[in-house]
Every structure is written in C-alpha cells, then in structure tokens.
Image 1 (cartoon, rainbow, N blue to C red):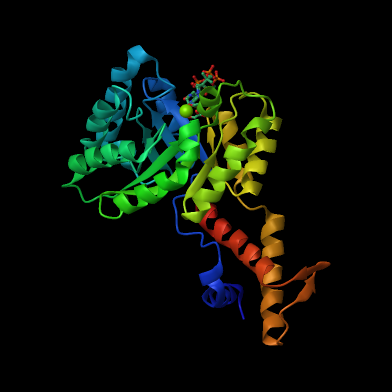
Image 2: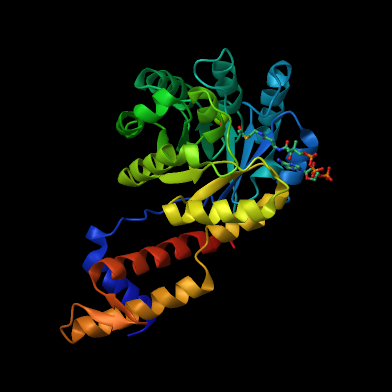
Length: 324
Ligand SMILES: CC(=O)SCCNC(=O)CCNC(=O)[C@H](O)C(C)(C)COP(=O)(O)OP(=O)(O)OC[C@H]1O[C@@H](n2cnc3c(N)ncnc32)[C@H](O)[C@@H]1OP(=O)(O)O
Ligand SMILES: O=CC(=O)O
Ligand SMILES: [Mg+2]
C-alpha cells in the first residue's frame, strides 16, 4: 500500500479519536509590523513569513493610532497587495476597552479587500466578545468573506475566563461572518497584569502557558506562543520556540525579520520526525493486518496512542509544509 493510501486508511480508521488537527491557515510565525511604519510594512510583504500582523495596538504610540489605522486601510485598499501569496494578512486592532477599537474596526472592515484575520487583544470576558462580534457583523454583513478571529489571553482575569470565552466566541461565531481560529498567549501583558517583570526563562508563566495550549486544543484552535523580546538572542529564541512546539503550540509571535526562519523551522516537523512517523505508520498498518495491536518500533513499544502521535506529526507536516 502506498503511503498516501496508508495515511487515508489509518485516518479513516482512527481519525475520530485523534486530536483532530483541523485544516487551518499556517501561522508558525505571526509577525508584528507597527501599522504606522511604512518602511517596515513594505519590507514585511517581501518576507517569507506565514502571518503578517499589521498592528494598531501596542507597537503603535498613542499619538500615532490614527496614522496606523489609515495606513493599514490604504494597504487593504490597494489591489497589488492582494496577490495570492502564502501569507495570512492580519490586523491587530486595539482592545474593546480602549477608545480606539471601534475606529480601527470601521477603517479595516470597510476596506476594498478585507484582512484574512483580525486579532483582538486583551479579551477578558464574554461581554467584550459580544460587543466586538456585534460590531464586526454589522460592518461586514453584506460581504461574502468570512474572517478568521484570533483572541488574546493576556490578563489574570483573561486566563481564568479563557474556557468560557472560547466557548462563547465559538457559539457566536457560528452564525456570523467571523470564525474563531486561534488564540495568542500574550505573556508580556500577563506579566504586567499579575504584577511581575518577566524572568529570562519565563518559569513564572508556565501555568498560564500550559493552560492556554490545553484549552485551545480542547476547542481545536491554533495556539500562538509568547513573544521573545530579546530579538538578538537567536539561540534563546530557538530554545523557546522548540519548547512551545513541544507543548503543543502551533506558532509563535515574532517582532523582527531575523526571528522568522528560526520560528518557522521550529513549528515544522523535522525530517527526522517525519521519517519516524512515516515508518511507524507503515509498521503499525502491517502489524494491524497481522492482528497485533502492540509491537516494537525502533526499540519502543508502539500501540494506538503512539500511532495517533505519528498521525499528528504527519497532519501538522502536511498543513505547514504548504508554506515552505
Ligand atoms: C508584546 C507585543 O505586543 S509585541 C508586538 C508589538 N511590538 C512590535 O510590533 C515591534 C515590532 N518590531 C520592531 O518595531 C523592530 O523590530 C524593533 C523596534 C524591535 C527593532 O527595529 P530596528 O532597530 O529597525 O531593527 P533592525 O535595524 O535590526 O531592522 C533590520 C531591518 O528589518 C526591518 N524590520 C525590523 N523589524 C521589522 C518588523 N517588525 N517588520 C518588518 N520589518 C522589520 C527594519 O526596518 C530593517 O529594514 P531596513 O534595513 O530595510 O530598514
Ligand atoms: O501582546 C502580546 C503580549 O505579550 O502582551
Ligand atoms: Mg499584549
């Protein structure tokens, strides 16, 4: 049996019990570009990055908010930027509790071409989500596009309410024009919210980091890991990106072009992992046909859960390698 047939076969047999990696837009590196910085914006669209996030929020000074939203609006209105490329064109608006959110949404969602994704920071509770989704739905009711929504968890109350917020956003987005696709762990704001400064290894963030990825996966959402602000420390970036991937995150926020290749590599299963998974799935299939549920592969006992892990590796590889 060839490998693709095998994958389909195994998939049909067992997909119901897999973690179900749904089809999603790869966002291994989610790169911020301050919305008022035309030089950086122009550069961003030349880079090989999965997701370009034009920022209206914290990367923009308070007295440049209007400039940022108008600049982003001009980009969205310009056809040449809509050329099909393998990147996700996203906008991070200001939080619902700010005085800027409504103006940001109006500028961005009445553009000639809509962004693929809207990122909503500092989501604390369901009331904020309701307000936001009402605004969005009223602005794009006549449009045929569906926009992905990514919400941020970045306060103590946001971490506590995260499960309820996801559930509510999914319920509301089922009837609307915007679909909850993922979650960003806003670790810097979380540090501010709990009254600490970030340590170099981020040990103080472990509970929130794990809770966020776990709940995201429970709702079949993408999970985007914390930003590494020491942007010249590429060795540290690699370490924390690989750690995030190992925890189940599907991508990481980046702030500088040099961070992109390291992060995108970390969230693409390696050649070694793909070879391991391919061999394991073939071996699993052979043993199933012989009526053996447990067998030895490369010195380890393999049964159904390990087969599912191998299947996950291949699912993530197939999804993310389209952008390589
Ligand atoms: C916690 C959070 O909310 S994170 C999100 C908010 N923060 C941000 O958005 C910050 C984004 N990053 C940046 O603004 C910048 O990378 C900084 C301020 C950290 C460093 O900027 P610089 O000193 O210009 O970096 P550097 O000189 O190394 O840049 C090298 C090149 O990459 C470009 N570049 C740097 N950062 C970016 C970026 N984020 N997007 C696109 N291009 C960028 C620079 O313009 C420069 O290009 P050029 O030589 O053609 O001018
Ligand atoms: O928005 C990101 C953060 O870390 O805060
Ligand atoms: Mg933040």
